[in-house]
Image 1: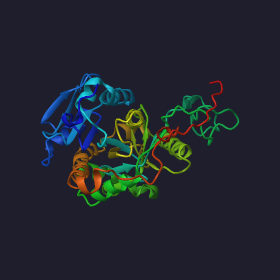
Image 2: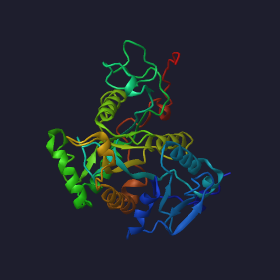
Image 3: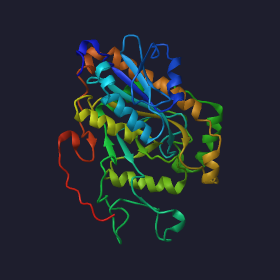
Amino acid sequence: MLLHTDIRIAPKVFIVSMFSREQDIWAHNPQFNIFAQAIAIPGLSPLFPHVHCTQDGSVCELVTGAGEINSAVTMTSLLFSKTAQSMFDFRKTYFLIAGVAGGNPEHVTLGSVTFARFAVQVTLQYEIDAREIPKDFPTGYMPLGVRPPDIFNVFPPILYGTEVFEVNDNLRQVAYGLTKNATLHDNTIAQAYRANYGLDNRFIAGSSPPSVALCDTITADTFWSGNLLAEAFENTTKLFTNGSAVYCSTQQEDNATLEALLRGAISGLVDFSRIIIMRTISNFDRPFPSQTAVEGRFAIQGGFASALANIQIAGSKVIQGILDQWNDAFEEGIEPGNYIGDVFGSLERVSIPLVYPDL
């Protein structure tokens, strides 16, 4: 039984961090102290069992734990546990997913801040080890449900429902407007490393200073690297979104977080139109010319410190903008001009017929 809403905490903004360093960066924020309150919620990560909030409850934050399973369980517990429902009212809360990510040098560089419209779960496919695939196969990944001879570039006959999420693009544009002129953190190690990408005209963005970008994110439990996987996942992203998404960030949690929030929205606990996906770039997802994939994976790239700093630099501008304009613009919400939700049309109660051939 929920307590009366006027005694529950109703955050205006809720920051979703994925691991401790992403949380720690908020201690350097002079505008609000998210560590004024610590509220234990059953079902959160054993390593991060508390929701942290400002004294007035206007801004809260938690750490999900890294990876899709941690994110899904933590966010589900936050929304659906009896303790959380007695403590919080999230119906008007803006959820700011704020974490570091890998980056596609075709679109971003180390330290860049990105805001996504689409999140694509690119490894939810058939997979064969690349060492065992036929020579004419472009990748070992194939959409679920395909059958020879058409096994590539075919929209998945089987959908699990979490493959693609789309969030409110009008809200994304607002977040971009609040942050696009921010002075972002940069460092000499990152500058020297990214200069290597200037050797390839495809990677001009990768060799440039960090900036704020509008581009999409892909989710995988694996912390992958390399040109071949990057090319495969670029194709998957386009295929799963009918060419609408262009991925620039890679991470391990967002589709899981969004699935939990979607179920919360279906249950009337949250508003799915109030989600912002912000990822800052800590490392490149592929090597520079003349570098191997293994060398790139283990290189000291220098982007991590700037990515962490820019979570707080850009995120604070988003949060402060929401707080300052709450009465005029944000309390009633930013109406989406695009479809929002999952591939099943769950928020619109759209029934999508699915065929499940033998796996």
